[in-house]
Image: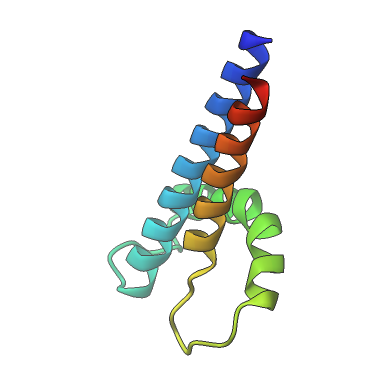
Length: 92
């Protein structure tokens, strides 16, 4: 049971890091620090988008429109921490 809990913890932690990288990449693209016409950059950003967008889309539908401010990654990270803590508390 401990191995399964460690695996869940590692997967959730990895996904949180992917969310952070996705947010930072979107900021760098919006401020023209990196250019998506570079094929490698485009592939990395596209992979991050494909990994994070299915989880962020339902949250974006629930949140009110705040102009250019997207709080869905913050909500998802908090939700992932909550679910992870809930699983560990139930397992004890």
